[in-house]
Length: 338
Image (cartoon, rainbow, N blue to C red; front, top):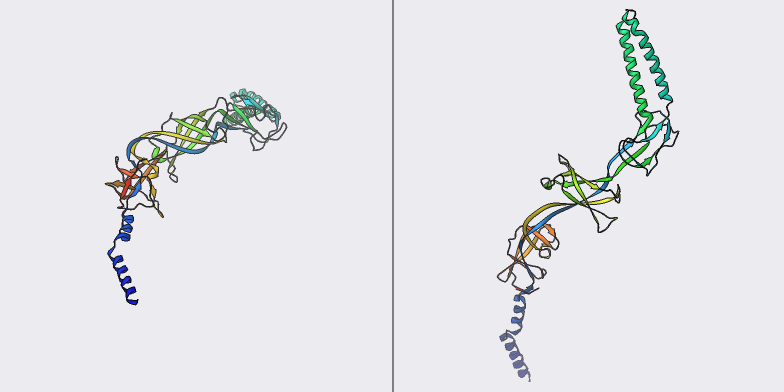
């Protein structure tokens, strides 16, 4: 009985050693090709667009204020929200000081006129007449200045956005009124230095604001800064926006999209470009003769679901778009249709 058991065990061992069934199955599984989908790198034209966030500003704005302090405000003729024209009188100042200056001017003029014949006869020296002339000139300038400041005019056409005094208040340093021109607006964008040659005065710029989703407004480049900001490596661009219906308002958040022309480059599906863990490197698996080859690339601009490859890939090469977890350099692949 014992001998029979030993013979059975030996036979089983011999069968196990002589059979390649289980081992062959493991090897076959290890060497089986990874099924992948692919895309082909192609030369394509790309529309270069860049979007910059900014704030809508009034086209022009001014503080309305007299040049002289210490005057009482006689009457403010407009209020917040009122539209004014350039040169329109918007406030008047108390004229007591003006009247006093005019009285002084009349006195000096009278004295000067009386001294002129006396001077001609040698009764008054040249120095005295010169001092009198200087006093007269100074007094006339003071009167002219006070007259200009007795009626305050708006320097631009626009809408009154602030009123800081009431009738009868003493004017100090704060502006009486603030006016903004809003039938045209502007946006200031800080554009990357690499696009300095691409931006030209007159270029159209697409303006979008959150308050009007899905709607865009057309602006034009009106001014380009002649120098770059050394700290940010950007240059300032002023964009003018027509606003005759005044739907847009100063202070709104805006996005300015520049269309900077077309460039030609190698494009692939964006899913083909993977990021290496723990670094900023990008890579693809190029499929050649049924084998995946790991390759670093430098990607560029994204357009829809495509991405340009600046370096590392040539047009016509095929790259994997799926199965990245199972792929490795030198791994056999089987291409499946989309």
